[in-house]
Length: 76
Image (cartoon, rainbow, N blue to C red; front, side, top):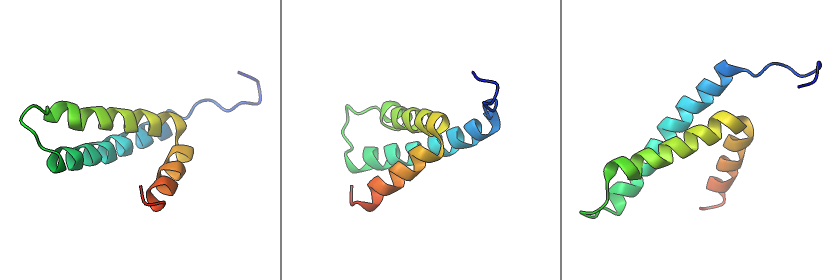
């Protein structure tokens, strides 16, 4: 860490993390409902995307959200 570097903004991390968890859970829930099968675990189908999107959103912040929005606009 250089002297010119700003300290890590934990408040911003947690805001991005919580928003990512909510969006990831929504995506996982949508997948689980559309592809429902007796063997699919709801906890895995909802929890795994929530954790992944939350961590990516928290660590990479606005760069991740811009990339996700660009990916969504391209038609998936």
